[in-house]
Image (cartoon, rainbow, N blue to C red; front, side, top):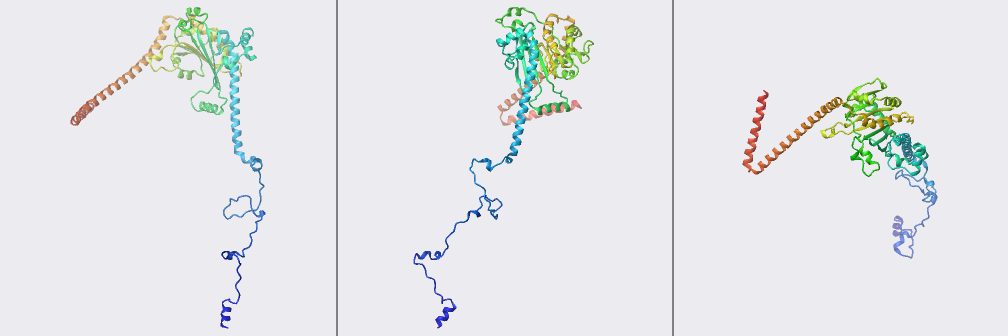
Length: 450
């Protein structure tokens, strides 16, 4: 009875469950339930980036192959790239259109001016002409050959120095060694550069950018024998010619650019300015002597200037350097003629062709008539000598400074060698004597000032 009471108090009345007959080590897992597969509808196929505690939405996204980009992306994701692409295409379009516009203006320029150059020179351009082009030029004129396309402009007549600079060349004429003709246009391919250049001219003293054509003619000046090769056809006749003329500086200048020209060019600064009643009010004469003006200011030149109008910037006959010389070697005379013209905005070059033609023929007038009285050339020489004396003075001062520096350098080298040859005590005495000597010199200077 006592045993029954003890069993009822401590649960001993219920029998223990029977263990399986199998392995006793897995008795605890004998009644574990079988695992069942989870439903696919409750699993989210999209990763959640809202945090560790985020709950799955359960919405499914259809699976696509890797190459179906149009199903996984849209054009709205590439807005920034689209804007950048449009800007790049705009820059490229502006560049191409500006470059094309400059080349068209250059072709129009050479179409007009090559007619005059072909009349005056035996060789025009850099590469020569083809047979068909030569026939057209001889029979119907150079202009028709250009328009017909038989004359390759970029190769034969024009050389493109840059996207806004073009040039041509001519040679083979009596009294003229060669002619360089350059064309400078606006940077239409770079609007920002154009805006910056015009802005600089508004806020600073720099001149406003203009489209300009400049011709530089180099006369033989009696040097045919040293310039023309003997093997060139007709060289013997050319080498016998005497095309020299007196050296001087003379110019016809547009008053709008006169101040800038005098500041920029050294040769023009040697002249004196005087208006002429024969010229339009827009122009003035800059000459070293009035007698030179009387010879060169012909009715044909006046008429050509009137035809050109404000397109003419300057016409200069000079033998002096355009840049201010820094030493006497820079003042060696070098005769040349310079013509500067603005490019007509309308594209009509008929108004500038007469002044260009007269400019080329000036070499003939100079070789025939530019031989002045000794009194005139003496006056011109006085002006040159005064300028050369100033240069000589500056040159002598610079040479004196160089000699002084060389002497100081030699003295220092001698002192250092003497110190190296002495021992320590002797070096100390040497330095003390040197210090005393400097003190006496300074005291002497102080007493002289007092």
